[in-house]
Image (cartoon, rainbow, N blue to C red; front, side, top):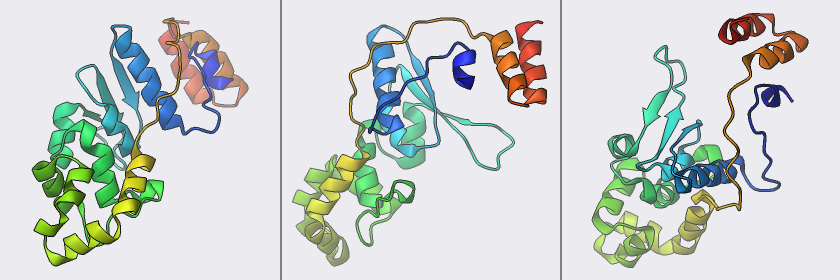
Length: 194
């Protein structure tokens, strides 16, 4: 109810992860001719980044505020393209999502493999060309790595594009006040011009 007071759309994805819903909403916005800025601390969402979608990624402990991650930001951060993010996560792992990744393959090796072969499947197909340690991980964990990629890949959810409407700072201030958030209520009233 609090976020609804702002005039924002509040949606539920049922049993799906919120990431799936967020990615689907971003895609709906792009299809409608708009652009999307996703505020999230989940690196899975970097796979949504494109010409019309960017991620505002919070940096813990930073006074600079969140980092804007666009296509160039994904390349700079990981050395891969946004569409390679699920393959990268499968290889490197993502502890926040419970994905351990390939044994003995870290960020640098995952990046180098994807730069050379492009996809997880092509990397697995070329396992014999790798060092014994990497070859063993790719061979022994091939099915598991594909499962990890599936876990890291956002699922499209059939959603409509929410209607555009202005933020209602006055109603949000009242809601904040009702929840005992007096300082926030004051700030919101300032934004409302009340």
